[in-house]
Amino acid sequence: MKYFLLLCLIMSNMTLANTDAPTLKMTKLADNVYQHVSYKMVGSYGMVGASGLVVVDGLDAHLIDTPWTVNDTKALVAWISSKNLILKGAVITHYHQDASGGLSVLNRLNIKTYATSLTNSLLSQKHLETSNAEISSDTFKLASNNLEIFYPGAGHTKDNIVVWLPKNKILFGGCFVKNINSKNLGYTGDASVVDWPQSIKNVVSKYPNIKVVVPGHGELGGINLLEHTKQLALDVLTSNHVVN
Image (tube, rainbow, N blue to C red; front, side, top):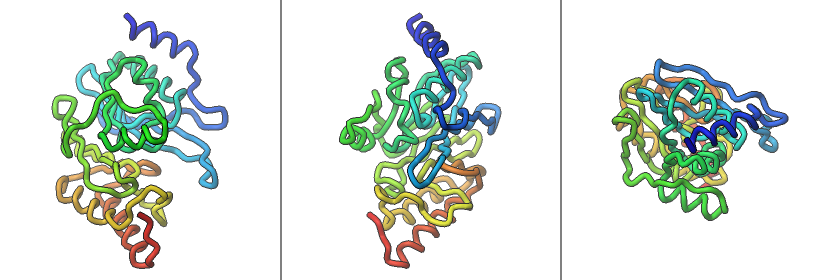
């Protein structure tokens, strides 16, 4: 009942987008997997779309990353309810706001939110909302083992994790993986470029049968996105412009 009343309040006050941003976008990737894309103006980068997933397990739904903002997270919660699904939990893949910006909404709805202890530590250092549960091992399973969380090592950030959907052979790489049109690694202010190539290798070694890779920004691809990202990192290392 409490959840229902809070949901009604969210829907009555909900705006699907930031004032200057496109509307939250939902795309069906498989019978039980949806991609959500939210948008935010980010300095010199302009309008940036950030991806996450909704993974359906029976009548339950699990989020992989929140949208950028509180408003878009409220919109996503309402969308899940409109599908007659129950939002059971959310996984945060790293501490940047394109993955964790809606944590406060989910926590106030008493939804289980998962992040690593390192992610929570980094969020806390920034005086930002932390998750209410922690991922307790380098490989961690949820949703009847249909959702597997893996820490590959540092890359885009030192806390980045990936999420494997074995039923669909979909890997959510988040910002750890660049889309095929990326000419560089983008923002590397919190990155460990020197570790990134090996971390990519760790993912490929653990999940050699990947069919679809969802990067944090830009178009979906295949396992080639991992090789592309590794090469971008190696290019930086070769040019001696390493950012740790």
